Length: 387
Image (cartoon, rainbow, N blue to C red):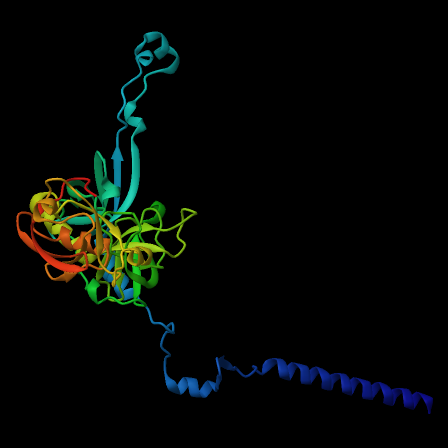
């Protein structure tokens, strides 16, 4: 009886083992069901097959590849070099010292720097910053397609930090000039240039502010401020809109570290275009000048002079025998308008007068002892390094 019970137990054990093996093998051979899960939804595999091929995903804000592709070919790298202005030390000419130090090649001490530029004409004209090409003995331009060419300096305008150079190559890509006056704070912009010499780079941001001035960077300031990353080497590069049209020439950054902190400045294309046309025409920019020193109207000054307005510019000084002096403007006058255009502050006054043609006459309204007076001023030519 005991033998029969053992035989029964062994048989049951074998049968259960075979069942477990069969079950395990059967489950391994059947593929697990596929589940594709997206954010907030679940789709059945069959439904996905019926829907056909899926489209590539897009970012929520879309892509700016078309704008970048349109503008990048017209943005160039600029390599400048200048030789140090020094002579060879007399001791280095002595044969005794040459024996120990050898011949010294002065050309090996050439200083080089990198920057960017924008091709704005099929004739080879390139806009860049004055500080990029200032005092350069040689200028080389490298295009996005790999072509290289020596460039000649057409002219500079230090007061706006702009310069025009020219290359002699055919089939040049030309950037499309945009409408900077229609730009608004919050518009998406792309900054294109050659930061730190790493190669052509595109960064994205928005327009943070318009009409920035009193930064004491240039004499004439009307900057577009952006948070698109701008670093050393981006100078002279392009700031373009979301369609790839040129809005400005990247010029400066505000930084205590030397790197981008999200405060960059570009010269509007309207200013760059007028400066470029003047340089191409005559090699320099001619601006109007009347010979005055001005001061901002502050709330404290308005209160002390019992002024009813805080717009305009106080005439703090007048150049003797200058246009303003000859026209009757006196220290203490408040300049209110130039040819009918209101003067908001000293910056707007400087810009309005600079736009006047030298030799012509302009009507200027001043406030003198709480009385408005209109004077005819014969505009002079702005001298170099004038304030």
